[in-house]
Image (cartoon, rainbow, N blue to C red; front, side, top):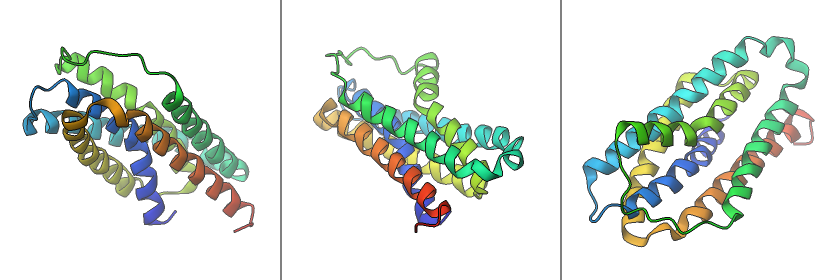
Length: 188
């Protein structure tokens, strides 16, 4: 997998965290770089670590299913991406973010919730023989940066962009899954 593809996947994975960061930014009466960095670090760390766990898990059985690995990658990316698209289209309930607690318990829950899809991507990476160190660092750093930006955007504009961010991230993952399948089938 090329570096550009990894970076695109990293950006797609970061969209859940970006969308949540936008909504957390709404809860800040004024933008705080310290709080934005805290949010970004939680999301970036978990978004980076989860693919590593998935990769280690996937390596345990990757050589047993090498003949169908491209189908698995296609299915995982497709399911995750379609789920993100579906969630972006569901009617969002009007939530008041003014009282959001940015404590450890809240941030751990949010970080884990937004990074579960990265675990599945890590399994896909094991099948595709991806450089996991570069991938983990890229995913973590891109998520960190986009989360900080998301907090700022949320503080400025509110939650209007949440569904667009989730939709875009889901679409990127679906398209990457299709590309992997098409390449392995020899069509591209």
